[in-house]
Amino acid sequence: MKKYNHTTYAILGILTTGCRTGYAIKQLIDQSLNHFWKISYGQIYPTLKLIVEEELSIVQTLSERGKPERNEYFLTDKGKAVFKNWLETPIEQIPVERNEVLLKLFFGRHQSKENTLLQLEDYQQKLVERYQLYQNIEKMITSTPHNTEDVTYWLFTLDYGKRVTNAAIEWCDATKEHFIK
Amino acid sequence: MKKYNHTTYAILGILTTGCRTGYAIKQLIDQSLNHFWKISYGQIYPTLKLIVEEELSIVQTLSERGKPERNEYFLTDKGKAVFKNWLETPIEQIPVERNEVLLKLFFGRHQSKENTLLQLEDYQQKLVERYQLYQNIEKMITSTPHNTEDVTYWLFTLDYGKRVTNAAIEWCDATKEHFIK
DNA sequence: GAGAGCATGTAATAGGTTACATGATTAC
DNA sequence: GTAATCATGTAACCTATTACATGCTCTC
Image (cartoon, rainbow over all chains, first blue to last red; front, side, top):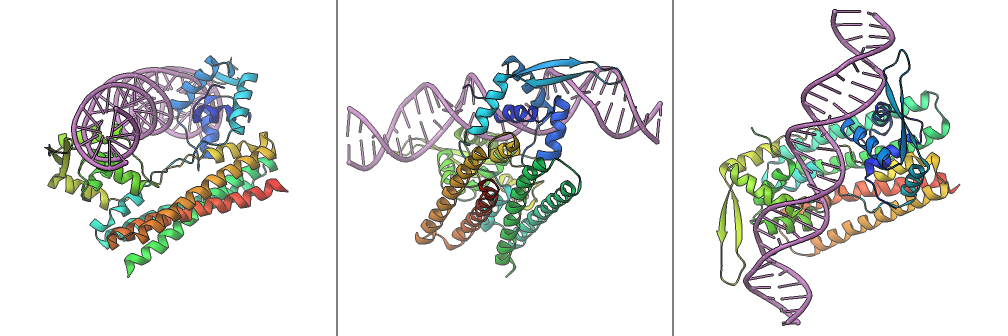
C-alpha cells in the first residue's frame, strides 16, 4: 500500500470524526490535539488537494445562503482503507526529540553555574505553565458534557502529557540541586 | 545580535569542545548527544561554510602525510561571543512534540480495543529498549575514565532521558489497563 | 462602520533527510 | 585485495512555517 506522510494520515483521521472543511480541521487540531500535534493551513489545503487527487476523498462545494462558500471533504472506501491500514501499523521508531535546553546544558562546563541555574529555572517555569494548561483542559472537558467515549481518549492523551511534563519538572528540581550548592 | 538556527549554535558549541572537523562533529553528536540531538552531513558542511562566511570561525586546511586532507575549524572572538549570547538566552518556547502513537490513540474510538492494545504494547517495548540503551550508556561512561566534569553534564542529559522515558512507560501500563478489562 | 469569525488558498523561506559521488588510509 | 574508517561535499527532495491575499457574514 502506498505510503503518505503523517500530515495526510492526521487529516484522513479527522475526516472520520465528522469534520468536513479545511477550516474545521485546523480548529479541531488547535483545540483538541494541540498538546501533541499541530498543523498549518499551508499543510492542510495542499494535503486536501492531494487526497482528492489520490482518490482517498471526494469534495463537495457548498454555497448555502447566508454562509461563505465551503468545500466539504468525505473519505472514499479507498481513503478509509488507507487510514485503517495506518492505524493498524505500529510506528517505525520513536523520533529523537531535539531539546535545546539539554543542548545548552551539555555545554554547561563552559558557562557559569549562575547561568545554568537561570536556564533550568526558566525551563522549569515553562514546564509548570504547560502542566497547568493540561490541568485546565482536563477540568474543562470533564465538567462540560461530551460524548463519554471521546472524553476517555482525550484524557489518555492529556495524561501522557501530564506524566511526561511532570517527569521533566522533577528532573529540573534534581538538576538544579547541583548548581545551588 | 544576528540570529542563527539551532544547528549553527550546536556546531559553534561543539567547536568549543575541541572537535575541529565536520567528520568529528558528526561523530561527537552521534556518540554523545544522540538521545536529544541529531544532525546529518547535509547540515554540517553547509553550516561550516556559513559560519566562515559570517566570520564566526576560520578554517585551516591540513594535509599531513599519512592522513587524508582535512579542514579544521576554529572559533573567532565573534563566534565565541555569538555562542555565549545564545547560551545565556532562555529558549523561546518548548516545542510541541508530534507523537504518532497519541495521534493513533486519539482515533481509538474508531478501532478495535485489540489493535489499540497492540499499538500500546509496541510503543512500550520501544520505550523500554530506549530506557535500557540509556542505562547502558550510563554504565559505559561511569566505568570508562573521562574528565569528571564532562561526565557530570553528560549524566544530567541522560537522567532527563531516563526520567521522561520512564514516565511514558508508566503511562503505557496505566493506559493498557483500560483495554485489557 | 469596525472587528471578529468563517473560509480558502499560495509563495517564499527554512530546516532537514537521503542518496549519491569521491578518494585517501589502515588493518586484516 | 578488500573492507572499514577517515574525510568532504552536493543535489534532490520532503516537511513545515510564515506571511500574504482574498472575501463573505454577523454582531456590536
